[in-house]
Image (cartoon, rainbow, N blue to C red):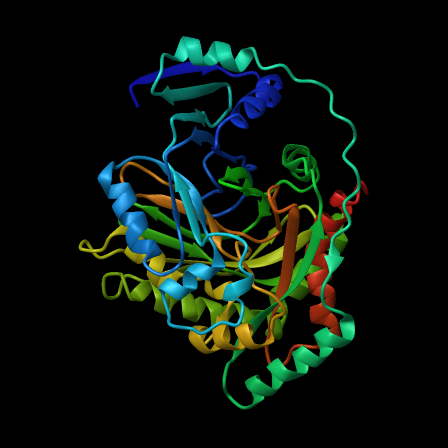
Length: 427
């Protein structure tokens, strides 16, 4: 970037800043909370830009490398779940129904980075900062009407869920798979969705370490994800799969008891361990021999409405590997597929009810040094104004010991905050 300047920050200016960001073809605002989370959440940043890469799945990772390598610098964007077709040759019955590209990334024309204490921001841009800052301050914020309630339609009935559950369990019994992540889709047709207003409501009620508001081409993404897919710092890779969920109580004693139940659950620990082993195998494919480690196993972390079991796996990337090689070999994240990964994805295509699209993909950034940080796109909604289409999904991991009613309720627990906020119900 040609110009860089630090400016004192007043959080009251955020609405103007986000209104200005919406004037650009692409923007991405990463807004994490500070919490006791290994390696932290996203770095707080806002990027806007015009120059972008849009790709279908096959060849997408190579195109991403070429796009970055042609002009090494920052990139922001998403990898949809369908990028798995660039990793494995898996037939799908959903290709004709896909509504979004598999990959969208953009080069920022302006990048704003917050200091850790958020007292200052550093603005990097292609134009003089004084002129840019003036245009931001001149943004007029007009009061908007209260958003109309949005009711996402559940596309899978409870009896259908139980039938599919039985089919997955039979595959587990027969040894096809050990674990699979089964997701339920929700959608709505809506002509005007205020992504910024929904993001503000979601952040206020359910702040997460990977909070994100993005407009990437036609798609707007609002995410309150608690899960990191993959982070790269120099040659170090960090993956933090989540497997294991229980509700959270506002009563500290009751919540401590709930966390103990989660921590000591043989079923939840088995689910987590299966995915940890899968992640270790994924990272080992592109890492130095013997460098793959489990830094934390079965960590219990409290979020706003749920407790989660999270493990942290790390490794050292081989010197001859590109950053896109690390992404490719770990994609899609095992927590959203199951194990073994390829067979789990084949069965997901067989039994799930529509394409996942962007859901359970990844969103984040690449740095000028080829480092990166990507979250898992869960607890998120996706909107395309051109298509008047809004959707979300929620899932849970099925193992042989899983119970249909409990897994169904877990899906409901995860999607409930999104459904209620969209419907205008305050938590």
